[in-house]
Length: 419
Image (cartoon, rainbow, N blue to C red):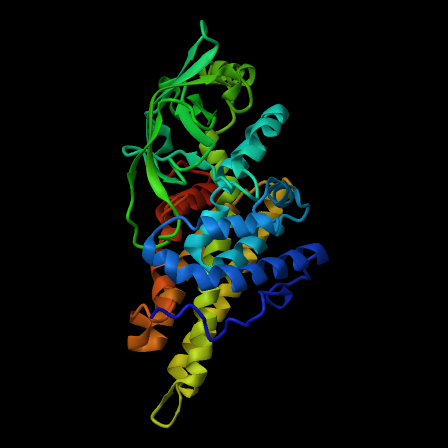
């Protein structure tokens, strides 16, 4: 029988003691609220949905009923003035479980695109559709990666052609690695409008629920985050109204004209979304790392070998000291980047990429160290550290691999076009 209860299930949420400043009271209250949900609802279901590799609709419905999975909460997370609400809530939910956490928060990717790029009328039309209702929750999907263009977003082959006669866009192509792809109501799709312009010729489009021509391709059987649905999305002559291009057609036409004339234009549509979400991925990684550290700390205090608790051995104690230090350091990097982005400060040294890179790689190391501390027990599915070690690896891959993050940081600090 798989054990779903951790010896530290009663551990408090991560608090201001790990930071150099106090959290605002409303953020602190929200943190404790999310931690309670993670403890009482997510953790007891984690092993079941990991094993079954199915979307945890009942858990999503519970999140919707208490107000955690709603358009109102998403709007508060996006607009909260310190920028800390999103990483704080994310860390707590992923402390519960990464797969279920992504099933709940995966909708934020297309929602962030909608809120950051969309016109007010587009937000009004589509935001609620992304979440559905408490009685019938829905999920949304961001479709950017492609089979032949993973990290190389500028090489995107999915096309969007404007049909003036029908005043509509026609989308064709295949997307891959799409969280909620195919099971979503709203799909937000990145596509090339002018392939000759590469990344500067792209835009994002809302594909409404039930649109003909959009279908799910391969569903991936994954190493980790197995409760989160990941699949290909096939677009075969998908016709959508002209109003479905995020930001509006007039703004897109102006941007394309500027690109053709080699004037300065805003960056790639999908990359702008990823830049805003990288600190959030760091917070996801911290949640998993913290879960593994807390479990290993408690286990090391209870497990006896050679007549004493294994934590009394310097090798184990020093490992736990490094784990805790890395977690707190990574949290500060994430909070710094999130705060800077929310206040509109330039991330001149790629602070978002720094946070994502360091936290993701620390999560891999910390979860592996937790397995090591548990020894043979840590290698079995009777203990959750095995699942956490599998889940952690994805953070070094999705929304930009560690190699891409290093490239972005190197370019930012050197001012050179490093390839």
